[in-house]
Length: 293
Image (cartoon, rainbow, N blue to C red; front, side, top):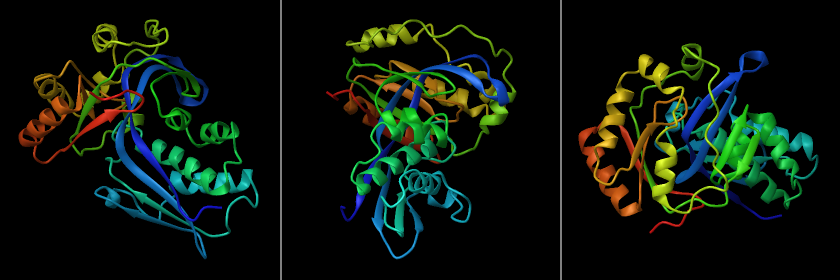
């Protein structure tokens, strides 16, 4: 058994998100093109005398250490599924670099990374059952466990990896104001929408990806903007940056993303956006699974 196990939790970005119907229990069927951008949060796990969770990073204060955390749920679920595989005591350290409740899957990515780190510490005993545990933890967690470009359908566990995805970078901006996911879904005017166009195996050229995205939507965008109008302003600001080929809100908000051909142009845009919006969180990141020029 290794001493310390570390896993990175990349931001989950919904490049397109169509709501295609209702499910029992108040959930919805979704059809989404999802990519992952890094760097993001970091989860580390090490043997200890007793269980503990240590949260650090710029967004640590947004998480209540006394409230149940998906990271701890992942630990407890893994222990229950694989008795004796882990030490009786574990210290989990969560370096929280991504904004909380921001539409980029921070909590789900942390849970997925915790499962990876726990399994590595245990000697990789879970195999394919790790995805079953991820599905128990939440709708987005199996996709975050995959961590590469994919199509996510149904409640989130129906995943189709995309073997081809072009080199690109993404800039994210978040107004550091919460917009509740339940409120966004509650404000949806139409809940039965057509699915996304066919993606095939993905795209090799960045231009082809952009053309595919143009007729798609994020069906949660309008209700989110009604709740937090600054999202629309951030979309316009992002779209106006030099080199930005596509801008949209991710997930249920309030993070807005912009797609760029390379990390150099993304870094320049991030610097300008931070100048324009000095109180907001801005980050330029590489897309996982795609080489950056």
